[in-house]
Length: 183
Image (cartoon, rainbow, N blue to C red; front, side, top):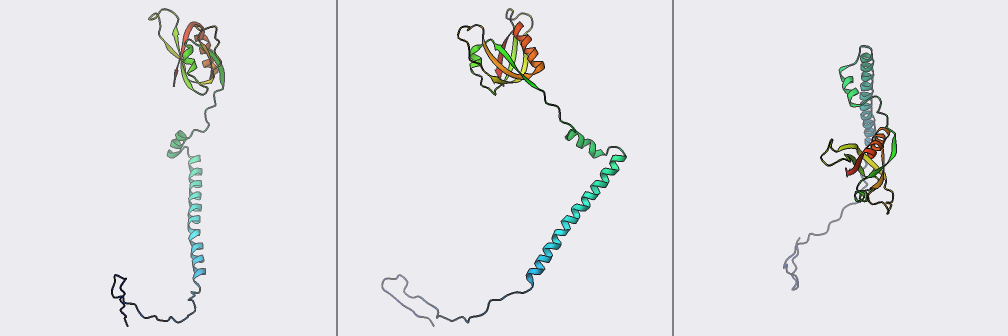
């Protein structure tokens, strides 16, 4: 049964509307027994990976025991090169005060910067021997305030270096003019 209506204000002249129908009330459908089966399947599914991991661990333990008696296995040499048994001991650092010839360069430095210290002989330019790197990658620990009365003497900077490098720096400071380059 369709009805047609027309109204002067609507653009559609005929609209078809179905007749209302009633739905009978009913109880909800309940499926019994599905949940326990799902739980059982999940429990069984968890056992398989656990059993596989246990078998794999047992196989690795047996393979390790066999290779330990008969000498090193081919894979153990590769593992030893990748991860060393003991890390190298840390080198203790000391604070080494160094007088740099160019005071303006030292004003550019901040604590934490990495610098290379270069020693140039104090003789005539182009004379015997050239400039050499005395300390590579030294960390700037402190930049003390510059004294205003000695402009030609350079500026002081405190570097954190290994003890052996500190001795080389002290010797080079006496015989050469020192300069720094930022790393």
